Length: 300
Image (tube, rainbow, N blue to C red):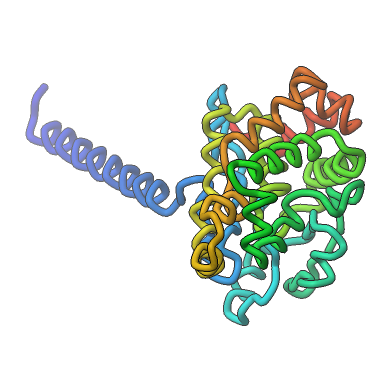
Protein backbone atom coordinates (compact mmCIF):
# COMPACT_ATOMS: atom_id res chain seq x y z
CA UNK A 1 0.00 0.00 0.00
CA UNK A 2 1.37 3.38 -1.00
CA UNK A 3 -0.14 5.55 1.74
CA UNK A 4 0.99 9.08 2.64
CA UNK A 5 2.70 7.71 5.75
CA UNK A 6 4.71 5.26 3.64
CA UNK A 7 5.69 8.09 1.30
CA UNK A 8 6.76 10.14 4.30
CA UNK A 9 8.82 7.27 5.68
CA UNK A 10 10.56 6.75 2.35
CA UNK A 11 11.23 10.48 2.04
CA UNK A 12 12.69 10.63 5.57
CA UNK A 13 14.86 7.58 4.89
CA UNK A 14 16.12 9.13 1.65
CA UNK A 15 16.95 12.42 3.38
CA UNK A 16 18.69 10.54 6.20
CA UNK A 17 20.85 8.53 3.81
CA UNK A 18 21.78 11.64 1.83
CA UNK A 19 22.71 13.41 5.04
CA UNK A 20 24.70 10.43 6.28
CA UNK A 21 26.62 10.13 3.03
CA UNK A 22 27.36 13.86 3.17
CA UNK A 23 28.76 13.54 6.66
CA UNK A 24 30.89 10.57 5.65
CA UNK A 25 32.16 12.37 2.55
CA UNK A 26 32.93 15.49 4.58
CA UNK A 27 34.79 13.43 7.18
CA UNK A 28 36.78 11.59 4.52
CA UNK A 29 37.57 14.80 2.68
CA UNK A 30 38.79 16.41 5.88
CA UNK A 31 40.99 13.41 6.68
CA UNK A 32 42.46 13.35 3.18
CA UNK A 33 43.00 17.10 3.28
CA UNK A 34 44.64 17.04 6.71
CA UNK A 35 47.02 14.16 5.92
CA UNK A 36 50.17 15.58 4.29
CA UNK A 37 51.84 14.03 1.29
CA UNK A 38 54.45 11.46 2.39
CA UNK A 39 58.06 12.64 2.49
CA UNK A 40 57.36 16.33 3.02
CA UNK A 41 59.28 18.42 5.51
CA UNK A 42 57.42 18.96 8.76
CA UNK A 43 58.00 22.67 8.26
CA UNK A 44 60.19 23.25 11.32
CA UNK A 45 62.49 26.00 10.12
CA UNK A 46 65.49 25.09 12.30
CA UNK A 47 65.36 21.49 11.03
CA UNK A 48 64.26 21.79 7.39
CA UNK A 49 64.95 18.17 6.44
CA UNK A 50 62.94 16.74 9.33
CA UNK A 51 60.44 14.34 7.76
CA UNK A 52 58.15 11.49 8.73
CA UNK A 53 59.29 8.21 7.15
CA UNK A 54 55.70 6.94 7.12
CA UNK A 55 52.73 7.46 4.84
CA UNK A 56 54.00 5.59 1.79
CA UNK A 57 52.09 2.79 0.09
CA UNK A 58 53.78 -0.59 -0.35
CA UNK A 59 53.61 -2.92 -3.33
CA UNK A 60 50.71 -4.88 -1.78
CA UNK A 61 48.70 -1.81 -0.84
CA UNK A 62 49.70 -1.58 2.80
CA UNK A 63 50.67 1.80 4.27
CA UNK A 64 53.79 2.64 6.29
CA UNK A 65 52.55 3.91 9.64
CA UNK A 66 53.11 7.60 10.31
CA UNK A 67 54.48 9.21 13.48
CA UNK A 68 56.67 6.25 14.45
CA UNK A 69 60.04 7.21 12.98
CA UNK A 70 61.44 10.44 11.62
CA UNK A 71 64.56 11.35 9.63
CA UNK A 72 66.31 14.71 9.79
CA UNK A 73 69.38 16.85 9.43
CA UNK A 74 71.41 17.79 12.52
CA UNK A 75 69.58 19.02 15.60
CA UNK A 76 71.61 22.15 16.25
CA UNK A 77 70.74 25.82 16.83
CA UNK A 78 67.07 25.02 17.18
CA UNK A 79 64.97 28.04 18.01
CA UNK A 80 62.85 28.06 21.15
CA UNK A 81 59.60 27.92 19.19
CA UNK A 82 60.91 25.09 17.01
CA UNK A 83 61.99 23.14 20.08
CA UNK A 84 58.39 23.24 21.26
CA UNK A 85 57.31 21.82 17.89
CA UNK A 86 59.98 19.12 18.10
CA UNK A 87 58.78 18.20 21.58
CA UNK A 88 55.28 17.66 20.19
CA UNK A 89 56.57 14.63 18.27
CA UNK A 90 56.88 12.88 21.66
CA UNK A 91 60.20 11.31 20.72
CA UNK A 92 61.73 8.72 23.00
CA UNK A 93 65.03 8.21 21.18
CA UNK A 94 67.35 10.20 18.92
CA UNK A 95 69.89 8.16 16.91
CA UNK A 96 72.88 10.23 15.79
CA UNK A 97 74.73 8.69 12.81
CA UNK A 98 77.50 11.32 12.68
CA UNK A 99 81.22 11.09 13.40
CA UNK A 100 82.72 12.16 16.70
CA UNK A 101 84.08 15.33 15.10
CA UNK A 102 80.65 16.27 13.78
CA UNK A 103 78.99 15.62 17.14
CA UNK A 104 81.56 17.61 19.08
CA UNK A 105 81.28 20.58 16.72
CA UNK A 106 77.47 20.69 16.74
CA UNK A 107 76.01 18.58 19.56
CA UNK A 108 72.36 17.56 19.43
CA UNK A 109 69.80 19.82 21.09
CA UNK A 110 66.81 17.81 22.23
CA UNK A 111 63.57 18.15 24.16
CA UNK A 112 63.74 17.06 27.79
CA UNK A 113 63.56 13.30 28.22
CA UNK A 114 64.69 12.23 24.73
CA UNK A 115 67.52 9.68 24.93
CA UNK A 116 70.48 10.30 22.63
CA UNK A 117 72.23 7.27 21.08
CA UNK A 118 75.43 7.63 19.05
CA UNK A 119 75.82 5.24 16.11
CA UNK A 120 78.91 6.29 14.14
CA UNK A 121 78.38 4.88 10.66
CA UNK A 122 81.82 6.04 9.50
CA UNK A 123 83.91 5.02 12.51
CA UNK A 124 85.90 2.59 10.36
CA UNK A 125 87.02 5.45 8.11
CA UNK A 126 86.23 8.82 9.75
CA UNK A 127 88.29 10.84 7.27
CA UNK A 128 86.33 9.64 4.28
CA UNK A 129 83.55 11.04 2.15
CA UNK A 130 80.61 13.31 2.95
CA UNK A 131 81.59 14.10 6.53
CA UNK A 132 84.72 16.02 5.51
CA UNK A 133 84.31 17.00 1.84
CA UNK A 134 82.73 20.33 2.75
CA UNK A 135 86.03 21.46 4.26
CA UNK A 136 87.57 21.56 0.79
CA UNK A 137 85.12 24.28 -0.21
CA UNK A 138 87.23 26.73 1.77
CA UNK A 139 89.81 26.49 -1.02
CA UNK A 140 88.12 26.70 -4.44
CA UNK A 141 91.34 26.13 -6.39
CA UNK A 142 92.17 22.96 -4.45
CA UNK A 143 88.54 21.86 -4.60
CA UNK A 144 88.48 22.23 -8.38
CA UNK A 145 91.59 20.07 -8.67
CA UNK A 146 90.46 17.33 -6.29
CA UNK A 147 86.70 17.34 -6.78
CA UNK A 148 86.00 18.98 -10.12
CA UNK A 149 84.96 17.44 -13.44
CA UNK A 150 82.80 14.80 -11.81
CA UNK A 151 85.40 13.48 -9.36
CA UNK A 152 83.25 14.48 -6.38
CA UNK A 153 80.39 12.31 -7.68
CA UNK A 154 82.68 9.29 -7.89
CA UNK A 155 83.80 9.93 -4.31
CA UNK A 156 80.21 10.02 -3.10
CA UNK A 157 79.38 6.82 -4.96
CA UNK A 158 82.36 5.13 -3.31
CA UNK A 159 81.24 6.39 0.11
CA UNK A 160 77.73 5.04 -0.42
CA UNK A 161 79.17 1.63 -1.24
CA UNK A 162 81.09 1.79 2.03
CA UNK A 163 77.89 2.65 3.90
CA UNK A 164 76.74 -0.83 2.90
CA UNK A 165 79.94 -2.79 3.44
CA UNK A 166 82.32 -1.27 6.00
CA UNK A 167 82.26 -2.79 9.51
CA UNK A 168 81.23 0.35 11.40
CA UNK A 169 78.30 0.89 9.05
CA UNK A 170 77.07 -2.67 9.55
CA UNK A 171 77.33 -2.27 13.32
CA UNK A 172 75.59 1.13 13.34
CA UNK A 173 72.76 0.14 11.01
CA UNK A 174 72.19 -3.13 12.87
CA UNK A 175 71.67 -1.22 16.11
CA UNK A 176 69.53 1.39 14.38
CA UNK A 177 67.11 -1.04 12.74
CA UNK A 178 66.85 -3.27 15.81
CA UNK A 179 66.00 -0.18 17.84
CA UNK A 180 63.47 1.02 15.27
CA UNK A 181 61.89 -2.42 15.49
CA UNK A 182 61.36 -2.06 19.24
CA UNK A 183 58.02 -0.41 19.99
CA UNK A 184 59.29 0.66 23.41
CA UNK A 185 61.83 2.96 21.72
CA UNK A 186 59.31 4.68 19.47
CA UNK A 187 58.63 7.33 18.32
CA UNK A 188 62.24 7.83 17.31
CA UNK A 189 64.36 10.00 15.05
CA UNK A 190 67.61 9.29 13.22
CA UNK A 191 69.88 11.85 11.59
CA UNK A 192 73.32 12.79 10.34
CA UNK A 193 74.57 16.28 9.40
CA UNK A 194 72.38 17.17 6.43
CA UNK A 195 70.00 14.21 6.69
CA UNK A 196 70.65 13.13 3.12
CA UNK A 197 73.49 10.57 2.89
CA UNK A 198 73.81 8.28 5.90
CA UNK A 199 70.27 9.18 6.89
CA UNK A 200 69.07 8.99 3.29
CA UNK A 201 70.44 5.48 2.87
CA UNK A 202 69.00 4.31 6.20
CA UNK A 203 65.54 5.57 5.20
CA UNK A 204 65.82 3.98 1.76
CA UNK A 205 66.86 0.63 3.25
CA UNK A 206 64.00 0.65 5.74
CA UNK A 207 61.42 1.56 3.09
CA UNK A 208 62.81 -1.13 0.78
CA UNK A 209 62.50 -3.77 3.50
CA UNK A 210 58.90 -2.65 3.93
CA UNK A 211 58.39 -3.22 0.17
CA UNK A 212 57.77 0.37 -0.83
CA UNK A 213 58.25 0.58 -4.65
CA UNK A 214 61.76 1.47 -5.78
CA UNK A 215 60.61 4.62 -7.64
CA UNK A 216 58.93 5.88 -4.46
CA UNK A 217 62.05 5.15 -2.40
CA UNK A 218 64.16 7.14 -4.86
CA UNK A 219 61.68 10.02 -4.86
CA UNK A 220 61.85 10.18 -1.06
CA UNK A 221 65.64 10.10 -1.17
CA UNK A 222 65.90 12.90 -3.76
CA UNK A 223 63.52 15.11 -1.81
CA UNK A 224 66.42 16.15 0.43
CA UNK A 225 67.48 18.44 -2.42
CA UNK A 226 64.35 20.52 -1.83
CA UNK A 227 65.25 21.22 1.79
CA UNK A 228 69.05 21.15 2.03
CA UNK A 229 70.30 22.95 -1.08
CA UNK A 230 68.45 26.18 -0.17
CA UNK A 231 70.21 26.14 3.23
CA UNK A 232 73.59 26.31 1.55
CA UNK A 233 72.77 28.74 -1.26
CA UNK A 234 75.06 31.43 0.13
CA UNK A 235 77.93 28.95 0.56
CA UNK A 236 77.45 27.71 -3.00
CA UNK A 237 77.24 31.21 -4.43
CA UNK A 238 80.36 32.35 -2.56
CA UNK A 239 82.30 29.28 -3.72
CA UNK A 240 81.37 29.91 -7.36
CA UNK A 241 82.16 33.63 -7.03
CA UNK A 242 85.64 32.66 -5.81
CA UNK A 243 86.26 30.56 -8.91
CA UNK A 244 84.92 27.19 -7.84
CA UNK A 245 82.97 24.88 -10.14
CA UNK A 246 79.25 25.12 -9.28
CA UNK A 247 78.78 21.38 -9.66
CA UNK A 248 81.07 20.68 -6.70
CA UNK A 249 79.04 22.18 -3.82
CA UNK A 250 75.82 21.09 -5.50
CA UNK A 251 77.09 17.50 -5.40
CA UNK A 252 78.29 17.84 -1.82
CA UNK A 253 75.16 19.42 -0.39
CA UNK A 254 72.69 17.66 -2.67
CA UNK A 255 71.89 14.07 -3.58
CA UNK A 256 71.82 12.25 -6.91
CA UNK A 257 70.28 9.02 -8.13
CA UNK A 258 73.77 7.71 -8.84
CA UNK A 259 74.66 7.86 -5.14
CA UNK A 260 71.79 5.72 -3.91
CA UNK A 261 72.09 3.41 -6.93
CA UNK A 262 75.73 2.77 -6.01
CA UNK A 263 74.71 1.71 -2.50
CA UNK A 264 72.02 -0.66 -3.75
CA UNK A 265 74.38 -2.05 -6.39
CA UNK A 266 76.80 -2.87 -3.58
CA UNK A 267 73.96 -4.37 -1.55
CA UNK A 268 72.68 -6.61 -4.34
CA UNK A 269 76.20 -7.62 -5.40
CA UNK A 270 77.07 -8.78 -1.89
CA UNK A 271 73.71 -9.95 -0.57
CA UNK A 272 71.39 -10.26 -3.62
CA UNK A 273 68.23 -9.21 -1.69
CA UNK A 274 67.34 -6.69 0.98
CA UNK A 275 66.30 -9.55 3.27
CA UNK A 276 69.71 -11.18 2.99
CA UNK A 277 71.40 -7.84 3.64
CA UNK A 278 69.47 -7.68 6.89
CA UNK A 279 70.11 -11.30 7.85
CA UNK A 280 73.69 -11.81 6.64
CA UNK A 281 75.05 -8.27 6.75
CA UNK A 282 73.29 -6.87 9.79
CA UNK A 283 72.51 -10.07 11.67
CA UNK A 284 68.80 -9.29 11.82
CA UNK A 285 67.01 -12.59 11.28
CA UNK A 286 63.80 -13.33 9.40
CA UNK A 287 61.64 -13.22 12.52
CA UNK A 288 63.08 -9.82 13.48
CA UNK A 289 62.54 -8.52 9.96
CA UNK A 290 58.92 -9.65 10.09
CA UNK A 291 58.49 -7.93 13.45
CA UNK A 292 59.64 -4.67 11.84
CA UNK A 293 57.12 -5.13 9.02
CA UNK A 294 54.32 -5.94 11.47
CA UNK A 295 55.14 -2.81 13.44
CA UNK A 296 55.32 -0.39 10.51
CA UNK A 297 52.72 -1.69 8.07
CA UNK A 298 48.96 -1.38 8.23
CA UNK A 299 46.24 -2.39 5.78
CA UNK A 300 43.74 0.27 4.67
